[in-house]
Image (cartoon, rainbow, N blue to C red; front, top):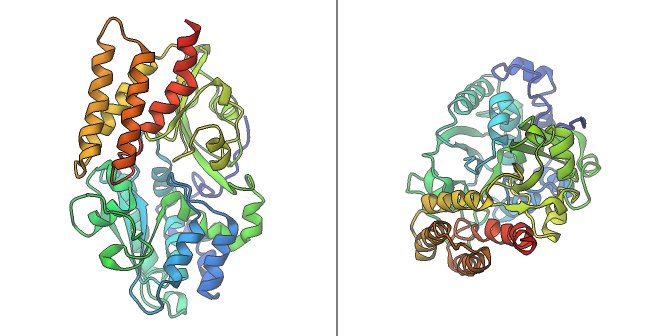
Length: 417
């Protein structure tokens, strides 16, 4: 089995997550001490130079968002938010970090806040994550008690307050502007972009929003430097990624490896191969809003740009494996049902369109003369229209699994019949 290279999960399973003393003994909060002795400019430049990209799904350069939030104004109120509303099917990496090493998240958040001049922050955690909420809250209280949160942190003159906000279970609240609406106490409806959160976010103030895994990389980058981080992974996708592997594999679980590992290595070397010796059928990469990979993609490096070149997306790093006996039409039906259920209903294209996609496929599969060649091109046409006219990423997502399943797998299956 390939050996993991852990950065975000470096303390997972090695320390007691409810003990701040064990975290400190593992060099915890050393990066924060170093950061507070530096100028904020040096901190966000270090993150920018590291090439760290958002680990929540979009893969946007983290340092670029940080710079915008830092320089947009010098004396205005600013906020930082950790997006821990992990609702993507097949994804549970953020839960692992919060449950096994919550202080790493807090340290990353305080560093991010210092770099942009924010004095208040929130950890927005989905309500179903009871243990995550408990452990993050406990870690926050411990951090206040040791002077890592609150007034004049470590004698630096920097003040920062942090609190947990519990989500209500909406998948859409994982989208940053919808999350902001929820934090403000409103219903989880998306906002129109622009402006973006770094310009005008929480209560109209510049707001930096990062994913749990993204923030968990901050301390290691500050301690070891951007050059060190760039030496890991690939040129355009530096660092490591947590992959959550589930489905028809012998050893499902969470694993952290440098970017560039292949799907074949993840499935066969790391996760023990397909269960019961069955053939490989497909892998859904990135969850419901991800893309289907076929056998021809097994040796493509797992990085944002390399996957995009072949019509795939890394997304959250979820890898849902299906053996060759699975009915992929039924899998797609479940995905479309998910989007139909999770649509907030604010915009007509998504509200009507996701229901139409699901109902069309469901009705077609019930017919004896079901023909992929007739159904999928029409579904793709509708999904492309929905994607162009919807307000937020939910309406823009169904096209990804639909088009990839059709082009990468079903076209070939139909041709071979």
